[in-house]
Length: 428
Image (cartoon, rainbow, N blue to C red; front, top):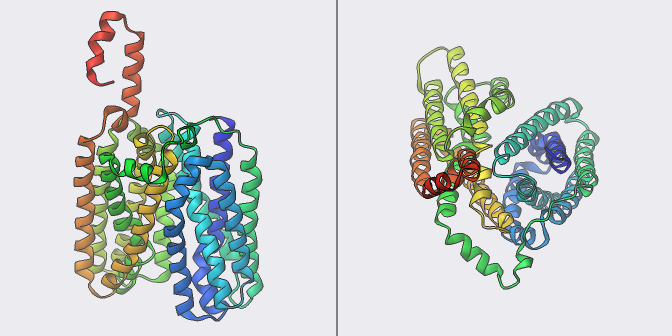
């Protein structure tokens, strides 16, 4: 990879490392350490989602017009101010304002970094680039959470202030690192001044494949990521009798599978159609929900229930490792020239909607309606498979299987006139 891509990946790791310091402890910090109560802590978590939903529709337009790097630097400074403000805030109003800044900055980072990866990669290298991003993000979150857990002390506010100060420092360090990145020239909407913001959204909505991918993405994030820290954990505690330590082990198993399997899975994914890979993830997650059903609804020993619950998180991790080099590159390949930022922001907006709705629906179901909860999300997982197969029918070969398309193009270019004419009707 080039120097620009290396710096981008370092940036991903640093931002994830900083977030890992504080995300697991935010609720405890606001509710107990600052003594602001569970209601305020819940509002802080909601503010993160609301801030993301408010800024993402404008972030895509800014990335397209200004480029991803200036937008990312502004987001990092905003997030750093929010993190520092959270560490120093002593009342509810200050906490909510700081959380808004941190949530908005964090939300804009995602499409900005994704667009930088798109601009610094080709269709052949993009899957590996996004797989590396996902690997480093999970590694950074895990290491940050582990170190933060040893630094934090619920009896001392200063220990949490230190955590938020470290997070802010990571964001500012990332500003320094990425300020040195020399981005290759990429077309922007500024090169075509006749395209309006409303027109760019209209163009996106008229892209049938992109709309189908957004619907599929909503179901993906709703049925998996939206359940991790809400519905699935509540189901494990209430239905399966899982202890908090076992829940921590399950989360660790999820991260471990991603870190260990990511690049082994990548070799498998690169040779398959993207739509078929996503369809396979739906089947794997359906098996995960069956295993979760056994953990909470079966009649085995507590040890068996715990092992099944940990296996559920591990199976989800395997599916995540398959999706990371598949979905984000597909979003980029569906975007017209110069519109990658708009498409990345639109998909990030869908993700945030799913992450907001998922816990609201799954949490109450998991706590009281154990069997319906498992059956509902088992059906959603099977729905992923159906939607992915339907999406594949509307994709070109270059979008669904870019590696094979690239090899076919090379063969066509290297062939004689007759052979090239013979291969051209294949759609390459």
